[in-house]
Image 1: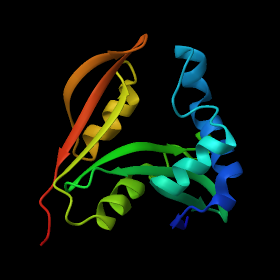
Image 2: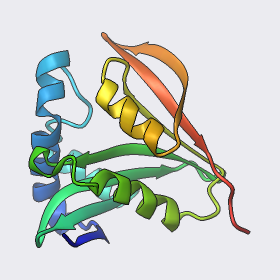
Image 3: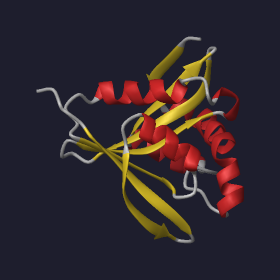
Length: 154
């Protein structure tokens, strides 16, 4: 299985919305809200233009995406990573983390958020080196903040 990571463009917006909707629908149903679900075309266009956004391609189709915010201080926030449900548990997420970290070799810290009760996400993020540093409420959902300290190459 060949996995590619290619910078997303505004031409990818409709497909990225579809992929995120499929990936985050269960969270939307469970929590009644989900920041990755049901983006408008305008919202997703804004993300593609103002964040570092990659599409994940497998079998010649977009099967996921990665959204990164550069904090401009050698720290980065992984604002989103998703893979279509049919492509989960195939190592794509681990490859995505390796890829994104390789794109920013001078990063000192990566952070990300996920719901506190999403133990499967916790297992995955811990497996790739993240640790929980904080828990807090965001509206009606308890969130955990994960952090990974890096050894940047100068």
